[in-house]
Image 1 (spheres, one colour):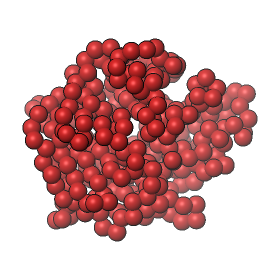
Image 2 (cartoon, one colour):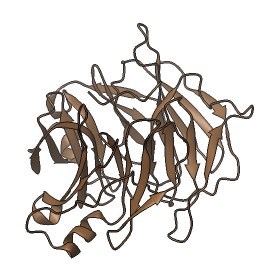
Image 3 (tube, helix red, strand yellow):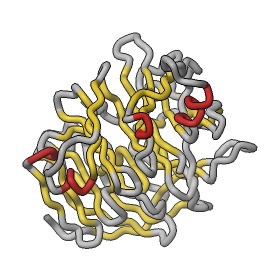
Image 4 (tube, one colour):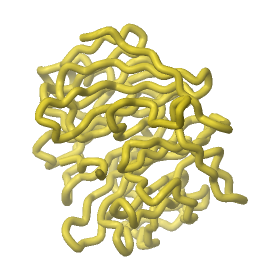
Length: 326
């Protein structure tokens, strides 16, 4: 079962183990070509735009992982497994992968002189840490916890939860979500709150109390894809019509006020959007469609959110997940 495409009970506590995990950060980029030339951009500007970019490219079972170094040069990374379907990067230097079977793996720190090693996140019996399949695992801004959706997409009576894991103290928490989530990654609003896109709107879950409130009006009402920068300054969101990506101030977005800082027109089906830590760069993955190659485009705030680099995905890379090294 592949991760789907982007197109109030008491919480239960659990224990889990990550054998041999040193909680650090890593980012990977999927098999990508080096066709990065946006018109008028210098090689140095493109290198700065792509430094730290990570792309997981290709369909499940044939995907590749690649990371761009400080010079903007791509380096293939060892895959955590053949069924890897989603990737997230954490502040401490580790990558977090979600497989199509709902299992999770965490890497050690990614370095230029060696390949990363991967450790499965599992419960005491080596079983997956949640009863339902896990999707779209995402690191918290602090890098000490991650959140994933625990649900069965397509089930006529789905039961959904937000699954939280702290690998440092080896604990996990399940917070039920009443609304049905859409196939989109959760996004950390800050270190305590997580935004989950559902059929009723965006549900903001307070991980300290387990409370969740669906926001049904204003700019949140029809969000289909949301990504908040780790510093909490800005949010990138895609509405259900998929025509554009909006960049807004996070607090204005949460209060349903203000105007977009920028609007970027879509040039195809939007597969993923990711802001870097300080909301200085935005990576957008456009799906290539049937038989067509996908593209990852980087936009920068310094240029008024104009295109700064373009990467054409090779081979089976019609789809991609993107992340940023801290």
